[in-house]
Length: 206
Image (cartoon, rainbow, N blue to C red; front, side, top):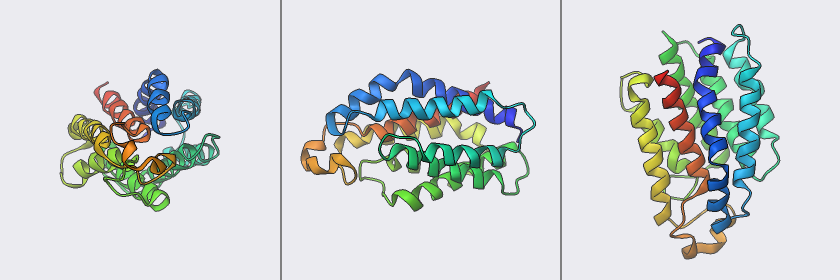
């Protein structure tokens, strides 16, 4: 995978994240500190800056590893460390042997979930980012098809997972103090990661 290809994949992600900052802030205002949109804006800008600085000659695994450390230091609650761990997994997957770009991307996305879980420890159904990440990754794990073929299905699974959080009781973060009162609100973290998978799908359509 070239760094140009990585740029093609991740710039649409940054567009979606930036465009939805206000929406994410609105969601977080209902159950959290109301700063998730701002944090995601910082994360989006950091990813965009890195992608726009690429020449096409860089090692993708190294680019993602460096970016993961930058994301981990983003100020704004747990979003930075969690997104940083996800990108650390992307870097680990990028360094694995693969037959082609699609195989490499598949490795990246699967390792990203593993790395994220190592930090988060959250399970599906607990109203967290994992409610979008796990359903999307499961699509990859259960099929031999390429990511390009599965991308739209992954994005749809992530969106459905994020939508399902409206019926869940929060188990993590500030929202967990609300207990049953957290029902009726989508988890902003799950929504932000559903945007990630939608962006990847858009990038693969180019």
